[in-house]
Image (cartoon, rainbow, N blue to C red; front, side, top):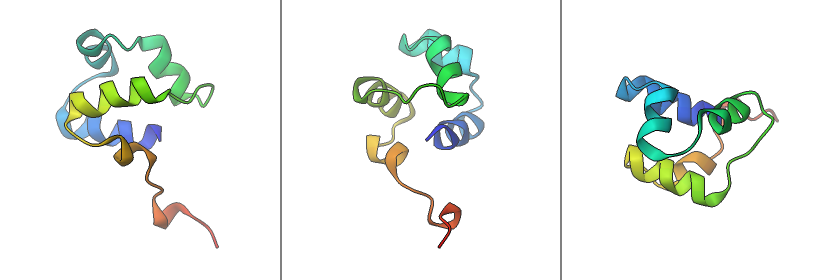
Length: 69
């Protein structure tokens, strides 16, 4: 899921700090998410989805190219 967030950061030119400041989702939450220590709850995903103008499903979709058979 963090890969999707990172993709949105690159497209928007935002930093995690800017996103945290704008949304109220802490940088600690974003860092823990990046490190795999934490998976954001639905309410946080909704905030981030609204911020980037995407759906919550955008974060939940599995990248088919990354799935091994």
